[in-house]
Image (cartoon, rainbow, N blue to C red):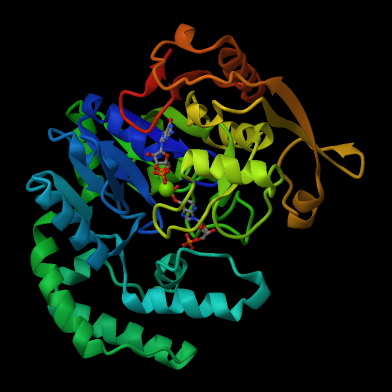
Length: 418
Ligand code: GDP
Ligand code: IMO
Ligand code: MG
Protein backbone atom coordinates (compact mmCIF):
# COMPACT_ATOMS: atom_id res chain seq x y z
CA UNK A 1 0.00 0.00 0.00
CA UNK A 2 1.33 3.39 -1.04
CA UNK A 3 0.11 6.82 0.09
CA UNK A 4 1.30 10.14 -1.26
CA UNK A 5 1.84 13.62 0.16
CA UNK A 6 1.53 16.22 -2.58
CA UNK A 7 1.99 20.01 -2.60
CA UNK A 8 -1.07 21.61 -4.18
CA UNK A 9 -0.06 25.23 -4.67
CA UNK A 10 3.37 26.76 -5.46
CA UNK A 11 5.34 24.69 -2.94
CA UNK A 12 6.18 25.28 0.74
CA UNK A 13 2.68 24.28 1.85
CA UNK A 14 4.09 22.37 4.83
CA UNK A 15 4.69 18.91 3.35
CA UNK A 16 7.63 18.22 5.67
CA UNK A 17 5.48 18.59 8.77
CA UNK A 18 2.80 16.09 7.68
CA UNK A 19 5.46 13.62 6.53
CA UNK A 20 7.09 13.84 9.96
CA UNK A 21 3.71 13.45 11.66
CA UNK A 22 2.68 10.39 9.62
CA UNK A 23 6.08 8.73 9.21
CA UNK A 24 5.64 6.48 12.25
CA UNK A 25 2.63 4.81 10.56
CA UNK A 26 4.63 3.63 7.54
CA UNK A 27 7.52 1.23 6.95
CA UNK A 28 9.13 3.24 4.16
CA UNK A 29 9.28 6.97 3.33
CA UNK A 30 10.34 7.83 -0.22
CA UNK A 31 11.19 10.85 -2.36
CA UNK A 32 10.32 10.56 -6.06
CA UNK A 33 11.05 13.89 -7.74
CA UNK A 34 13.07 17.08 -7.63
CA UNK A 35 16.35 17.73 -5.90
CA UNK A 36 17.88 20.23 -3.52
CA UNK A 37 15.50 22.90 -4.79
CA UNK A 38 13.05 21.44 -2.29
CA UNK A 39 13.23 22.64 1.29
CA UNK A 40 11.09 20.72 3.75
CA UNK A 41 11.16 21.93 7.36
CA UNK A 42 10.49 19.78 10.35
CA UNK A 43 10.37 20.86 13.97
CA UNK A 44 11.92 18.08 15.99
CA UNK A 45 12.51 18.36 19.74
CA UNK A 46 12.15 22.14 19.51
CA UNK A 47 14.82 22.34 16.82
CA UNK A 48 14.17 23.21 13.18
CA UNK A 49 15.54 21.03 10.40
CA UNK A 50 15.43 21.71 6.69
CA UNK A 51 15.68 18.72 4.39
CA UNK A 52 16.51 19.13 0.74
CA UNK A 53 17.18 15.57 -0.39
CA UNK A 54 16.71 13.12 2.47
CA UNK A 55 13.02 12.37 3.13
CA UNK A 56 11.65 14.28 6.13
CA UNK A 57 10.41 10.99 7.59
CA UNK A 58 13.97 10.11 8.60
CA UNK A 59 13.28 11.06 12.24
CA UNK A 60 11.06 8.01 12.49
CA UNK A 61 13.98 5.75 13.33
CA UNK A 62 12.26 2.51 12.42
CA UNK A 63 11.40 3.78 8.93
CA UNK A 64 13.44 2.89 5.88
CA UNK A 65 14.06 5.89 3.65
CA UNK A 66 14.29 5.77 -0.11
CA UNK A 67 15.47 8.35 -2.64
CA UNK A 68 14.07 7.24 -5.99
CA UNK A 69 15.48 7.48 -9.50
CA UNK A 70 13.16 10.39 -10.37
CA UNK A 71 15.16 12.70 -8.12
CA UNK A 72 18.35 14.56 -9.00
CA UNK A 73 21.06 14.54 -6.37
CA UNK A 74 23.71 17.10 -5.54
CA UNK A 75 26.08 14.79 -3.70
CA UNK A 76 27.78 17.47 -1.64
CA UNK A 77 24.36 18.50 -0.27
CA UNK A 78 23.50 14.87 0.41
CA UNK A 79 26.75 14.40 2.32
CA UNK A 80 26.03 17.54 4.33
CA UNK A 81 22.57 16.27 5.28
CA UNK A 82 23.99 12.92 6.31
CA UNK A 83 26.58 14.66 8.48
CA UNK A 84 23.91 16.89 10.05
CA UNK A 85 21.81 13.84 10.93
CA UNK A 86 24.83 12.10 12.37
CA UNK A 87 25.45 15.10 14.62
CA UNK A 88 21.90 14.73 15.93
CA UNK A 89 22.56 11.08 16.64
CA UNK A 90 20.17 9.94 13.87
CA UNK A 91 21.60 6.91 12.12
CA UNK A 92 20.63 5.98 8.56
CA UNK A 93 22.97 3.00 8.32
CA UNK A 94 21.16 0.06 6.80
CA UNK A 95 17.94 2.01 6.26
CA UNK A 96 18.75 4.58 3.57
CA UNK A 97 18.43 3.43 -0.03
CA UNK A 98 19.44 5.71 -2.89
CA UNK A 99 18.49 4.71 -6.42
CA UNK A 100 21.35 3.58 -8.63
CA UNK A 101 19.49 5.28 -11.49
CA UNK A 102 19.06 8.73 -9.92
CA UNK A 103 20.91 11.45 -11.79
CA UNK A 104 23.68 13.51 -10.25
CA UNK A 105 23.59 17.28 -10.07
CA UNK A 106 27.14 18.65 -10.28
CA UNK A 107 28.37 22.13 -9.46
CA UNK A 108 28.57 22.57 -13.22
CA UNK A 109 24.79 22.25 -13.38
CA UNK A 110 24.47 24.94 -10.75
CA UNK A 111 26.71 27.21 -12.79
CA UNK A 112 24.61 26.53 -15.89
CA UNK A 113 21.42 27.26 -13.96
CA UNK A 114 22.73 30.70 -13.01
CA UNK A 115 24.07 31.44 -16.50
CA UNK A 116 20.78 30.42 -18.16
CA UNK A 117 18.84 32.68 -15.82
CA UNK A 118 21.06 35.58 -16.90
CA UNK A 119 20.40 34.74 -20.57
CA UNK A 120 16.67 34.91 -19.90
CA UNK A 121 17.09 38.55 -18.89
CA UNK A 122 13.56 39.93 -18.23
CA UNK A 123 12.08 36.42 -18.33
CA UNK A 124 13.98 34.96 -15.38
CA UNK A 125 12.23 32.01 -13.76
CA UNK A 126 13.71 32.89 -10.39
CA UNK A 127 15.09 29.37 -9.91
CA UNK A 128 16.71 28.23 -6.71
CA UNK A 129 19.97 27.99 -8.71
CA UNK A 130 20.43 24.45 -7.48
CA UNK A 131 21.10 23.14 -11.01
CA UNK A 132 17.80 21.27 -11.22
CA UNK A 133 16.71 22.20 -14.79
CA UNK A 134 20.17 21.59 -16.28
CA UNK A 135 20.43 18.17 -14.58
CA UNK A 136 17.06 17.01 -15.93
CA UNK A 137 17.99 18.45 -19.36
CA UNK A 138 21.23 16.44 -19.40
CA UNK A 139 19.27 13.35 -18.36
CA UNK A 140 16.99 13.82 -21.39
CA UNK A 141 20.00 14.58 -23.58
CA UNK A 142 21.44 11.25 -22.46
CA UNK A 143 24.67 12.72 -21.18
CA UNK A 144 23.79 12.63 -17.48
CA UNK A 145 25.71 10.98 -14.66
CA UNK A 146 23.86 8.38 -12.62
CA UNK A 147 24.49 7.16 -9.08
CA UNK A 148 25.40 3.76 -10.52
CA UNK A 149 28.29 5.33 -12.41
CA UNK A 150 29.97 6.11 -9.08
CA UNK A 151 30.44 2.37 -8.62
CA UNK A 152 32.46 2.07 -11.87
CA UNK A 153 35.27 4.64 -11.61
CA UNK A 154 36.44 4.29 -15.23
CA UNK A 155 32.98 4.71 -16.64
CA UNK A 156 32.39 7.64 -14.28
CA UNK A 157 35.55 9.40 -15.45
CA UNK A 158 34.65 8.92 -19.11
CA UNK A 159 31.13 10.24 -18.59
CA UNK A 160 32.20 13.17 -16.43
CA UNK A 161 34.78 14.29 -18.97
CA UNK A 162 32.20 14.05 -21.77
CA UNK A 163 29.74 16.09 -19.72
CA UNK A 164 32.26 18.76 -18.75
CA UNK A 165 33.54 19.03 -22.36
CA UNK A 166 29.99 19.20 -23.69
CA UNK A 167 29.16 22.25 -21.62
CA UNK A 168 32.51 23.83 -22.35
CA UNK A 169 31.69 23.57 -26.06
CA UNK A 170 28.01 24.49 -25.92
CA UNK A 171 27.91 27.10 -23.18
CA UNK A 172 31.54 27.96 -22.66
CA UNK A 173 31.22 27.06 -18.99
CA UNK A 174 34.14 25.12 -17.63
CA UNK A 175 35.01 23.54 -14.31
CA UNK A 176 38.15 21.56 -13.55
CA UNK A 177 37.29 17.91 -14.29
CA UNK A 178 40.34 16.52 -12.46
CA UNK A 179 39.42 18.33 -9.29
CA UNK A 180 35.86 17.00 -9.43
CA UNK A 181 36.99 13.45 -10.20
CA UNK A 182 39.02 13.42 -6.99
CA UNK A 183 36.11 14.88 -5.04
CA UNK A 184 33.62 12.33 -6.42
CA UNK A 185 35.95 9.48 -5.60
CA UNK A 186 35.69 10.44 -1.93
CA UNK A 187 31.92 10.96 -2.15
CA UNK A 188 31.54 7.56 -3.84
CA UNK A 189 33.25 5.88 -0.87
CA UNK A 190 30.83 7.53 1.55
CA UNK A 191 27.68 6.93 -0.52
CA UNK A 192 28.41 3.44 -1.89
CA UNK A 193 26.70 1.58 0.97
CA UNK A 194 23.42 3.35 0.22
CA UNK A 195 23.23 2.85 -3.56
CA UNK A 196 20.60 0.26 -4.48
CA UNK A 197 18.01 -0.79 -7.02
CA UNK A 198 15.24 1.03 -5.21
CA UNK A 199 12.42 0.15 -7.66
CA UNK A 200 13.11 -3.53 -6.98
CA UNK A 201 13.47 -2.90 -3.25
CA UNK A 202 10.16 -1.01 -3.06
CA UNK A 203 8.20 -3.54 -5.08
CA UNK A 204 9.64 -6.42 -3.05
CA UNK A 205 8.72 -4.57 0.14
CA UNK A 206 5.16 -4.05 -1.08
CA UNK A 207 4.86 -7.77 -1.76
CA UNK A 208 5.98 -8.39 1.81
CA UNK A 209 3.08 -6.22 2.97
CA UNK A 210 5.10 -3.13 3.85
CA UNK A 211 3.62 0.35 3.56
CA UNK A 212 5.12 3.33 1.76
CA UNK A 213 4.57 7.07 2.19
CA UNK A 214 5.82 9.18 -0.71
CA UNK A 215 7.03 12.70 0.01
CA UNK A 216 6.21 14.82 -3.03
CA UNK A 217 8.31 17.91 -3.64
CA UNK A 218 7.25 21.39 -4.82
CA UNK A 219 3.58 22.00 -5.73
CA UNK A 220 1.18 21.31 -8.59
CA UNK A 221 1.41 24.87 -9.97
CA UNK A 222 5.18 24.28 -10.38
CA UNK A 223 4.66 21.03 -12.34
CA UNK A 224 6.63 21.12 -15.61
CA UNK A 225 3.50 20.25 -17.63
CA UNK A 226 0.57 21.43 -15.56
CA UNK A 227 2.04 24.45 -13.83
CA UNK A 228 2.46 28.03 -14.96
CA UNK A 229 5.05 27.13 -17.63
CA UNK A 230 7.76 28.41 -18.06
CA UNK A 231 7.66 29.64 -14.45
CA UNK A 232 7.81 26.11 -13.08
CA UNK A 233 10.33 23.58 -11.88
CA UNK A 234 11.75 20.85 -14.12
CA UNK A 235 9.94 17.77 -12.82
CA UNK A 236 6.38 16.52 -12.67
CA UNK A 237 4.85 17.07 -9.28
CA UNK A 238 1.45 15.39 -9.67
CA UNK A 239 0.53 12.00 -8.19
CA UNK A 240 1.20 10.02 -11.36
CA UNK A 241 4.87 11.01 -11.32
CA UNK A 242 5.28 9.62 -7.83
CA UNK A 243 4.76 6.16 -9.39
CA UNK A 244 7.10 6.99 -12.28
CA UNK A 245 9.82 8.44 -10.07
CA UNK A 246 9.93 5.36 -7.87
CA UNK A 247 9.11 2.60 -10.35
CA UNK A 248 5.86 1.71 -8.61
CA UNK A 249 2.74 0.43 -10.37
CA UNK A 250 0.12 3.25 -10.21
CA UNK A 251 -2.50 0.86 -8.83
CA UNK A 252 -0.39 0.44 -5.70
CA UNK A 253 -1.32 4.00 -4.72
CA UNK A 254 -4.18 4.22 -2.24
CA UNK A 255 -4.44 7.72 -0.82
CA UNK A 256 -3.08 11.02 -2.06
CA UNK A 257 -2.94 13.64 0.67
CA UNK A 258 -2.85 17.20 -0.63
CA UNK A 259 -1.07 19.84 1.43
CA UNK A 260 -2.93 23.12 1.20
CA UNK A 261 -1.83 26.33 2.86
CA UNK A 262 -4.75 28.36 4.28
CA UNK A 263 -3.52 31.20 2.04
CA UNK A 264 -1.17 31.14 -0.95
CA UNK A 265 2.55 31.77 -1.36
CA UNK A 266 4.94 31.67 -4.27
CA UNK A 267 8.73 32.15 -4.59
CA UNK A 268 10.19 33.17 -7.92
CA UNK A 269 8.51 34.73 -10.94
CA UNK A 270 5.22 34.01 -12.69
CA UNK A 271 1.52 34.83 -12.44
CA UNK A 272 -0.22 34.72 -9.06
CA UNK A 273 -3.86 35.88 -9.35
CA UNK A 274 -4.59 36.30 -5.62
CA UNK A 275 -1.27 37.96 -4.74
CA UNK A 276 -1.38 40.73 -2.12
CA UNK A 277 1.27 43.30 -2.93
CA UNK A 278 0.18 45.61 -0.11
CA UNK A 279 0.75 45.82 3.64
CA UNK A 280 -1.59 42.87 4.20
CA UNK A 281 0.69 40.69 2.08
CA UNK A 282 3.62 41.81 4.26
CA UNK A 283 1.62 41.08 7.41
CA UNK A 284 0.90 37.51 6.27
CA UNK A 285 4.57 37.02 5.29
CA UNK A 286 5.74 38.06 8.75
CA UNK A 287 3.04 36.11 10.61
CA UNK A 288 3.77 32.99 8.56
CA UNK A 289 7.56 33.32 8.48
CA UNK A 290 7.27 33.15 4.71
CA UNK A 291 10.92 33.14 3.72
CA UNK A 292 12.32 30.39 1.51
CA UNK A 293 13.66 27.28 3.27
CA UNK A 294 16.22 26.78 0.50
CA UNK A 295 17.15 30.30 -0.59
CA UNK A 296 15.84 32.57 2.18
CA UNK A 297 13.97 34.67 -0.42
CA UNK A 298 10.80 36.42 0.82
CA UNK A 299 7.79 34.48 -0.44
CA UNK A 300 5.07 36.36 -2.30
CA UNK A 301 1.82 36.05 -0.30
CA UNK A 302 -1.85 36.16 -1.24
CA UNK A 303 -5.31 34.86 -0.48
CA UNK A 304 -6.34 31.23 -0.74
CA UNK A 305 -7.28 30.33 -4.30
CA UNK A 306 -9.89 27.59 -4.77
CA UNK A 307 -9.23 27.51 -8.55
CA UNK A 308 -5.65 26.39 -7.85
CA UNK A 309 -6.53 23.78 -5.24
CA UNK A 310 -9.44 22.38 -7.30
CA UNK A 311 -6.94 21.93 -10.13
CA UNK A 312 -4.64 19.96 -7.81
CA UNK A 313 -7.54 17.83 -6.53
CA UNK A 314 -8.41 17.01 -10.15
CA UNK A 315 -4.88 16.29 -11.41
CA UNK A 316 -3.76 14.33 -8.36
CA UNK A 317 -6.95 12.49 -7.39
CA UNK A 318 -6.53 13.82 -3.86
CA UNK A 319 -8.40 11.80 -1.25
CA UNK A 320 -7.82 14.07 1.77
CA UNK A 321 -6.32 17.44 2.55
CA UNK A 322 -4.05 18.79 5.25
CA UNK A 323 -4.89 22.46 5.56
CA UNK A 324 -1.79 24.12 7.00
CA UNK A 325 -0.96 27.39 8.74
CA UNK A 326 -4.52 28.30 9.67
CA UNK A 327 -3.01 30.01 12.75
CA UNK A 328 -1.27 32.53 10.50
CA UNK A 329 -4.68 34.07 9.74
CA UNK A 330 -5.63 34.31 13.44
CA UNK A 331 -5.37 38.10 13.70
CA UNK A 332 -7.19 39.08 10.51
CA UNK A 333 -10.46 40.96 10.71
CA UNK A 334 -11.73 39.41 7.51
CA UNK A 335 -10.49 36.50 5.42
CA UNK A 336 -10.94 36.31 1.68
CA UNK A 337 -10.54 33.59 -0.87
CA UNK A 338 -10.82 33.25 -4.61
CA UNK A 339 -13.76 31.18 -5.78
CA UNK A 340 -13.55 31.73 -9.53
CA UNK A 341 -11.85 33.48 -12.44
CA UNK A 342 -13.30 35.25 -15.45
CA UNK A 343 -11.59 36.73 -18.46
CA UNK A 344 -13.23 39.37 -20.65
CA UNK A 345 -16.49 38.65 -18.86
CA UNK A 346 -16.33 34.91 -19.51
CA UNK A 347 -16.08 32.52 -16.56
CA UNK A 348 -13.14 30.09 -16.72
CA UNK A 349 -13.62 26.42 -15.87
CA UNK A 350 -10.02 25.73 -15.02
CA UNK A 351 -6.47 27.16 -14.95
CA UNK A 352 -5.74 28.51 -18.46
CA UNK A 353 -2.60 27.55 -20.42
CA UNK A 354 -2.07 31.18 -21.39
CA UNK A 355 -0.07 33.10 -18.81
CA UNK A 356 -1.37 36.32 -20.32
CA UNK A 357 -4.92 35.21 -19.56
CA UNK A 358 -3.93 34.06 -16.07
CA UNK A 359 -2.31 37.43 -15.43
CA UNK A 360 -5.43 39.25 -16.62
CA UNK A 361 -8.16 37.19 -14.93
CA UNK A 362 -10.70 38.98 -12.80
CA UNK A 363 -10.78 37.09 -9.54
CA UNK A 364 -14.09 36.50 -7.83
CA UNK A 365 -13.63 36.63 -4.05
CA UNK A 366 -15.72 35.50 -1.15
CA UNK A 367 -15.20 37.30 2.14
CA UNK A 368 -15.79 35.89 5.61
CA UNK A 369 -15.30 37.32 9.09
CA UNK A 370 -11.99 36.46 10.75
CA UNK A 371 -11.88 34.75 14.16
CA UNK A 372 -9.34 37.10 15.76
CA UNK A 373 -8.18 34.71 18.44
CA UNK A 374 -5.39 32.21 18.73
CA UNK A 375 -5.98 28.73 17.32
CA UNK A 376 -2.56 27.41 18.40
CA UNK A 377 -3.88 25.37 21.32
CA UNK A 378 -6.76 23.76 19.36
CA UNK A 379 -6.49 20.01 18.85
CA UNK A 380 -10.06 19.04 17.94
CA UNK A 381 -12.21 20.61 15.26
CA UNK A 382 -14.72 21.71 17.88
CA UNK A 383 -11.93 23.62 19.70
CA UNK A 384 -11.58 26.01 16.74
CA UNK A 385 -13.47 29.32 16.92
CA UNK A 386 -16.74 29.17 14.97
CA UNK A 387 -15.50 31.54 12.25
CA UNK A 388 -12.41 29.36 11.71
CA UNK A 389 -14.60 26.25 11.49
CA UNK A 390 -16.76 28.05 8.93
CA UNK A 391 -13.67 29.01 6.92
CA UNK A 392 -12.43 25.41 6.84
CA UNK A 393 -15.85 24.05 5.91
CA UNK A 394 -16.23 26.58 3.11
CA UNK A 395 -12.81 25.67 1.64
CA UNK A 396 -13.69 22.00 1.84
CA UNK A 397 -16.94 22.57 0.02
CA UNK A 398 -15.23 24.62 -2.69
CA UNK A 399 -12.42 22.18 -3.47
CA UNK A 400 -14.56 19.07 -3.04
CA UNK A 401 -12.12 17.11 -0.96
CA UNK A 402 -12.29 16.35 2.78
CA UNK A 403 -9.94 18.28 5.07
CA UNK A 404 -8.58 15.70 7.51
CA UNK A 405 -5.82 17.65 9.27
CA UNK A 406 -5.57 21.34 10.13
CA UNK A 407 -2.21 22.86 11.02
CA UNK A 408 -2.26 25.44 13.81
CA UNK A 409 1.50 25.72 14.37
CA UNK A 410 4.79 24.31 13.08
CA UNK A 411 5.19 21.60 15.74
CA UNK A 412 4.09 18.03 15.15
CA UNK A 413 1.42 18.21 17.86
CA UNK A 414 0.06 21.56 16.64
CA UNK A 415 -2.41 19.78 14.43
CA UNK A 416 -6.18 19.40 14.54
CA UNK A 417 -7.15 15.90 13.44
CA UNK A 418 -10.74 15.50 12.31
P1 GDP B 1 7.34 22.25 2.50
O1 GDP B 1 8.35 22.62 1.48
O2 GDP B 1 5.99 22.02 1.89
O3 GDP B 1 7.75 21.11 3.38
O4 GDP B 1 7.17 23.53 3.43
P2 GDP B 1 8.36 24.42 4.06
O5 GDP B 1 8.99 23.61 5.13
O6 GDP B 1 9.22 24.97 3.00
O7 GDP B 1 7.55 25.66 4.62
C1 GDP B 1 6.51 25.49 5.53
C2 GDP B 1 6.84 26.26 6.81
O8 GDP B 1 5.69 26.38 7.60
C3 GDP B 1 7.86 25.57 7.70
O9 GDP B 1 8.63 26.56 8.34
C4 GDP B 1 7.00 24.81 8.73
O10 GDP B 1 7.67 24.63 9.97
C5 GDP B 1 5.85 25.76 8.88
N1 GDP B 1 4.56 25.14 9.17
C6 GDP B 1 4.05 23.98 8.70
N2 GDP B 1 2.78 23.81 9.11
C7 GDP B 1 2.49 24.90 9.88
C8 GDP B 1 1.31 25.35 10.55
O11 GDP B 1 0.26 24.70 10.55
N3 GDP B 1 1.38 26.56 11.19
C9 GDP B 1 2.51 27.31 11.21
N4 GDP B 1 2.50 28.49 11.84
N5 GDP B 1 3.63 26.92 10.56
C10 GDP B 1 3.62 25.75 9.91
P1 IMO C 1 9.26 22.58 -1.83
O1 IMO C 1 9.42 21.11 -2.06
C1 IMO C 1 8.76 26.61 -3.50
C2 IMO C 1 10.32 27.24 -7.54
C3 IMO C 1 11.48 28.23 -7.56
C4 IMO C 1 11.30 28.83 -8.94
C5 IMO C 1 10.85 27.62 -9.76
C6 IMO C 1 11.97 26.95 -10.53
O2 IMO C 1 10.07 23.11 -0.70
O3 IMO C 1 7.83 22.96 -1.76
P2 IMO C 1 14.01 25.43 -9.80
O4 IMO C 1 15.17 25.72 -8.89
O5 IMO C 1 13.18 24.28 -9.36
O6 IMO C 1 14.41 25.32 -11.23
O7 IMO C 1 13.10 26.76 -9.70
O8 IMO C 1 10.30 26.71 -8.85
N1 IMO C 1 10.48 26.12 -6.60
C7 IMO C 1 9.92 26.06 -5.38
N2 IMO C 1 9.20 26.99 -4.72
N3 IMO C 1 9.00 25.40 -2.95
C8 IMO C 1 9.71 24.47 -3.60
O9 IMO C 1 9.90 23.21 -3.15
C9 IMO C 1 10.23 24.79 -4.88
N4 IMO C 1 10.98 24.13 -5.79
C10 IMO C 1 11.10 24.95 -6.82
O10 IMO C 1 11.35 29.19 -6.54
O11 IMO C 1 10.25 29.75 -8.94
MG1 MG D 1 9.73 24.16 1.04
